[in-house]
Amino acid sequence: MLPPSDLPLSRFTVLDLTRVRSGPTCVRQLADWGANVIKIEAPDEIDTGKGMGGERHGPDFQHVHRNKRGITINLKSPDGLALFKRLVEKADVVVENYRPDVKTRLGIDYAALSAVNPRIVLGSISGFGQTGPYARRPGFDQIAQGMGGLMSVTGLPGQGPVRVGIPVADLTAGLYTALGIMVALLEREQTGRGRWVHTSLLEAMVAMMDFQATRWTMKHEVPKQAGNDHPTTVPTGLFHTKDGMINLAGGGQEMWRRIVETLGLVEEAAADPDFATDKSRAANRAKTNALLQKALLEDTSANWIERLNRAGVPSGPVYSMDQVFADQQVQHLGLEWAVPHPVLGEVKLVRAPMNLDGVEPPRRPTPERGEHTAEVLAEFGIGEAELARLREAGAV
Image (tube, rainbow, N blue to C red):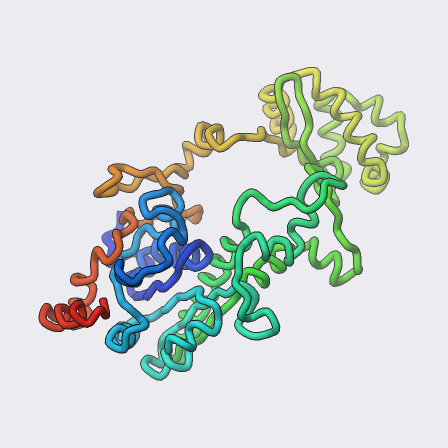
């Protein structure tokens, strides 16, 4: 394992003002690869947002705020704001997910921060964008799922809009912002100047609609709910077996040949022109699925998955979360990730899914509120006497 000073992002200092999920998800990408992340929260006595992001010792909070050190600063205090800007002088990145007007009101917008440090990169996440008619609306993942079109294509045909089971707009907005910050840091190596990087839950959600979105932008097709069937590739979907269900995915003539041979349906498929081509199978999806379904009921999920994969046909089980982490491949990949915690003992989180050969992310537990205030501020030249004055003034 590399020492902390040799991790890929250890040369960057990140000031983390984020809350709930989208912003913390962004910062976690940097923290997991060694960035010096300083999580800044309001002092306990003035924090009116307790519970945002979940209970501190609960799974949500522990997952998104790992590998950070925690300090408190009251940004609404003149002394606190001045202190924050002293940190900005030496930092590389600031990340926030306030409503757009809030950072300007606090005096931590890009113009204010770049005046202090022209090299600073500011990463911002909002609900709907930094400008425009909805800019000041409060953002929430499910609202973005609805407005971005995801709920309209999720669920069974005719069921009506369905929310996806994870906060996908929050998560992807965080990932896009982290990527944008990396781009800005790379650019800074050439220009010497920082940049404001921003996205929103709505922008991230529309971008994540990907080919479904471009079916509209290019062809003016409005995608519909397809349930467990793939919207364009036939046969791809969820099928019942003798003892459960499996996912099977196969498009194109070669994959169709492998499927019907594995399921013993060569003669039956050849006898009906509805199964002859990709186009005819797509036009007769229900009939195609029914042909496969009848055969799949004759054996168990495990046997079909083994036989189909041996034939080169993508197929797999449908797991509940406990089954996910019991799977031998998931265990081999080490996705359940142990982190020592001074209060909770060993906590099991989910590791970053990227693999950099020879590099293992640090395992620093999520900090308590203000746990590292004295330690971090000392690194920025704040001595004990000044820290005592700042505490007395309610700035930290």
